[in-house]
Length: 142
Image (cartoon, rainbow, N blue to C red; front, side, top):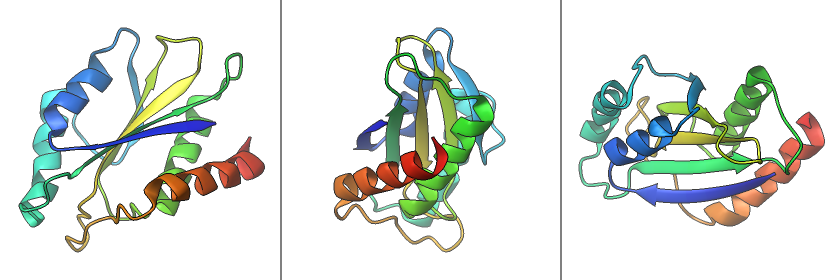
């Protein structure tokens, strides 16, 4: 499994991209919104806790090798474990599955600002941490 991480400024554009692809399907998360506009409004609540954080958006895609597939339930388990081990406890997030490539993959959009206490998820060594998390998930879940 591979991950591609991006940190950004705007939830609206990220969500429009993730949800706007043909065949995109929201399969999980901890938010109520059903479209990009509603989810953006929800994410704005976490931004209010730390308005000076310039890169509050965490967007990553998790991809399997061509020919491998997971059920929605399994993808949600992978997403939950990945976010937890990356430090996103208490953060808002949404899981969207795409079917536009031969590689089964999901997109995770999360707030780096935790709703529980307003603290910010660290960016320190996140690429190395992500690799370690993915290798652990592969051994345990796949």
